[in-house]
Length: 310
Image (cartoon, rainbow, N blue to C red; front, side, top):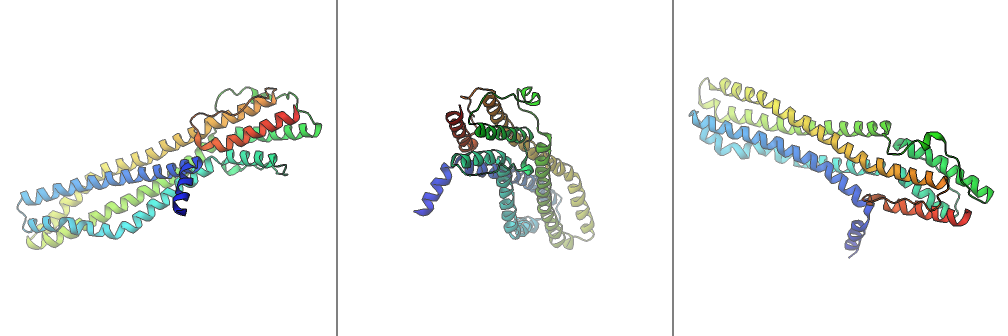
C-alpha cells in the first residue's frame, strides 16, 4: 500500500515526471541505435550463412545450426553490463534535467523562504547559470529589499541593457556546457555499442574457424579474409549510425535547451514588468508543467509584495 501511494505521489509530481521522462528519452536514444547496429550485424550474419551454404563449404550446415547460440552466447554475459549502462544513461538524463531547471528552483525556494519571513540570502548556482535570468533576479531581489527598507515599492528604472530584451536570448555558455556533457556521454554510449558489435564479430571469426576452416583445407584464410573485408565495408554503415547516434543526442540537447530558454525569458519579463510598475504582472507558462510549482512560489511572492508594499 505504501509503495502504491509512493508511485501515485511520484506520478502526480510534475517535476519528477519531467526528470523521469528525460532520463527515459536518453535511454531510448541509445537503445534504439544499439538495436539498429545489432540488426545490421544480424543481417550481415545471415548473408554469411547464405554465402557459406551456397558455396558448399564443408561444415556450413553445422555452422548454421551453431550460429545463433555460439555468436550470441557472449552477449548473454554482456547483459548485466548493458543494463548497468542503461541505468547510468538514465541517471545522466535525470541529473542533467535537474541541473537545467535548477535556476528556477533556486528563485522559487528564495521566494518561499521570504514568504515565511526567513532571512534567506539569494545565492544563484553559477554552475547552471542562465545569465539573463540570474543577473536580473539579483537586481530584482535587491530592489525589493530596498523597497522593504523604505516601506513602499515604487516604479523602478530598469537598466537599459535589460529593457532592450524582447525575446528569449541565446545563453551560449549554458548551451555549450550542456551540449558538451551530452556529447561526451554520447561518445561513451557509442563506444559501448561498438564494443558490443566487436564482441559479435570476434565470435563469428571463432565460429568460422571452428566449423569451417578445419574441415576445408586451405579455406581458413579465405573465409577469415572474406569476413574481415565484409566487416571493413560494414564499418562505413556502423560509423554512420554512430554519427547519427551522437547527432540525435545533440538535437535532444537543443530540445532540452528550448525547455528552459523560453521559461527563463518569461520569468525575467515578469520581474522586469513588476519593477516597472505593473504590479499585477505574474508568471504564466503554458506547456511547461515541470516548472509550475516554482512559478507558483514566484507568483505568491509577487502577490505578497504587491499587498505589502504597494
